Structures are given as structure tokens and as C-alpha cells.
Image (cartoon, rainbow, N blue to C red; front, side, top):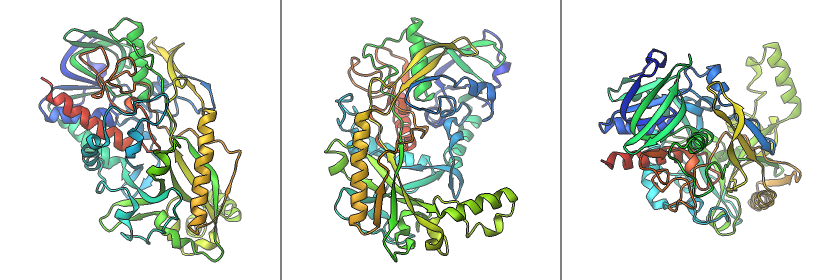
Length: 508
């Protein structure tokens, strides 16, 4: 059921088995799985409507270091969490690209994550399979061979150069959220509480007490046997830092709490000009298209394990986005302002996926931007810390220390050259590189800050997401990732949420 937090009496205490902080996909998955297993669950969500301005103001913070758009614009408080920021069109409405981590992403590849992930890919794989169903996707298949000729043009063979054909799967927000919200709002075991901002967390021998503030300033409490933080990499770290600073029962013996913040930078330095006389539709497999089973896929080019896994290079994925000829782009802009675009938009495309369906792509496109989605290695210096500014509830706002490290940029240069060489060797055309380009860090894919490690001296949570040194406090979401690969994290977030739900269900 859904509770109106403003109707909860001041100083009231709600008792429950499980309190989940955050009603994004991770929190909703854990909640619905445990409620289905007969557990009583309270879900606390700070936001109410997606445009709840007061709640979004709680996302403010400061940034130090490299150019970063801001903490307020790259996260969101509402039921559904950051899915409110999704903007990728899919046949089912606004959605996202899905792809799992690669097996080598879990391996010890970076100096500041020498153990890699404390779980194996074989352990994670069955949860990926379940996550596919939870997200409303097709089969757990992401290599190009599994989809070759399935609903689209055959993939061109890439020359040996470290690139292999692969895919993203496209999924709508509603396919993921609608079943979760129906279960949370209609279930007798769940109490969903929008407009409930956590301001204090205190651990006790038999559980924990969570202090909550309503939008009207009234405070109340939830006393739970177990608490799960599912607020994203910034908020999870902030709440643990607040708990540690107030003597609430959290200790950081590793020095990694808040640290290891990672994003997924996107690089547009490569431009592909097709070989003379080559029809762009010859590479239509590398566009978005519907497979025979109804799954919407986007063909992409992936680094294989011999390059990304063994040679210490950033993992990356390349997709092709068309460059609309300048005259047509200007005309489209002018006609759009005049309100006469609809009749001519077929000949004045906006770019983006769907380019291969244009009746004469060779007449409207000047080539392709090779979009690289990149891995950022974990670095201790990239961190969330508590700042001096305070929010409306008098709790410290976060400060993000972040930069794109020179060593990471040197690795990006290697990735660019590897991709350019492979495309040219495969006969796609000529690739030019803007050597001075800086990647865009604003993927809204925050990760790290509460990383997993079996040793409390090297991580914040154990392999099951339990905060080290506690019995009742857990974390779920990308904040627990020791490394993040290039992949959009949602499929892995859902898989890890299913895994945590299984662990909590099996505990007495």
C-alpha cells in the first residue's frame, strides 16, 4: 500500500522487518521480492511527484576538480528514482540501453581495485538471466553472433583488431517499473512512503532506527530488523558518512567510504567517413532494429577480452550515430521554429538511431560519429565527502571530488586508435580522430563509493552487500561496484538486487 507521509503522526514509530531507503529500481526489486516471500517491508522515498522541486533541491551539492554538470542534475528523487532522467526512445516508450558487465570487468585489472569483484561471473550470470525478465528484455544474449541476420542486415565482419560485433538491448521504463510499482502499491506486505526523507540512521543490537522527515518538517521513525540503502552512489555514501560522523554504529576501517566514485564518460572524438560508393545501409546492422523475436537491439562494436581484459586498457563500446549534413540540420532547425517541420522531417532527420530506415541516407548524412562509452577506473581521489552547506533538514550536503585522470586519458587514446584501426581494416571507411577532444562525463551512471570487498580493511560492504561491522545494514546498487566497466549499470543493478533479496530471504 502507499502511505501519505504527511499523515503519519509526529514522533510516531513504525515497526517492520525490512526498511528500504530509496524507491528506485534497486529498492523496488528488493522490496517486492521480500514482500512476495512474506516479509513486511517499508519503502522510504524522499520525492513525491517527478517534478517535486523541494525534493530535487535535496540533491544539491558541490563539485571540486574536473568539469562536472552537478549532483542535482545527474540524479533524481521520486518513486522510480533516476529512471525519470531516461531519454532513450524505445518501441514501448522512454527507456534505456541494457548490457551486462563483461566477464573481465570483474577481474583484478586496476591498481586501486586489486581484488576485482569478490563474486565471479558464473555466480552473477543466473541473476543476469533473471534480471532480463525483470526488465522486460529478450534472452540473455549480447554477442553479435547470437543476433546475426535476426531481423536486420548481417553484421559486417570486423578485421582482427580487437573489435567484435555485439549488441545493446533496448527496454522501456514502463516495462521495468510498472510491475514493480503495482506490487509495491497493491501488496499487503509493503508500505511505500513517498515524501519521506531520511535524516538519521542509528544501528542497534537487534536492528536499526531510521529517522524520517516529512515535507512539512514533521519527524517520525522506522524501527526495522534490517535496513537496505538503495539511494544511489551519492546518497548511499552520504547516509553512511552521516551515520559514522554521528556515532550511529558505522565505522570505516578501509578508508574507502565515499571513495572510488566512477562515471561512464562518453567520447565523440572519432568520425567515420564511409568508403566511396558505400551505401550506409550496408552497415544497417549497427543501427537500432527489431529482431525476429520482438527484441529491439542496437548493433555495437565491443572490445574483446584479449584487448580490454589482458592489456590493461579501458573497456569500451562503440556505436554509430549519423552526422546530418550541415545545410539540412540548419534547415530542420529553422523549420522547427516555424512549426512546418512535420511534413519534411523524413528528409530532414534529427540524427540518432533509426538512420538506416531513411530512404536515401547517402543524401542526408555526411558520415558517422563513433560514440565510445567508456570505463572509468576506480581512484581513491574521486570521492563523495560531507560538505559545510546544509540542506532543508540541516544535514550536510555532499561534495564530489572528481576528475578525469591523465592516465585514464592516455588509455582512452589507445582505445581510440584501436577502434579506428579496426574500422578502417574492416573496410568501413576512413576514421579521423580529434586528438584534443575531452570525453563527456555526464552519463548519470554514478558508481563506487561503498565498494564490495570481503576484507573490511579494503571495502565498505561484503560480497552480500552487508556493511562491514554491522549485522543489520545493507547496501544495494551501483555504489557497491568495485569497478564498473563501460556498461549501462541498470541490468547489473537489478541482478545484484535480486541476489541481495535472495540472501535476505534466506536469513532468519
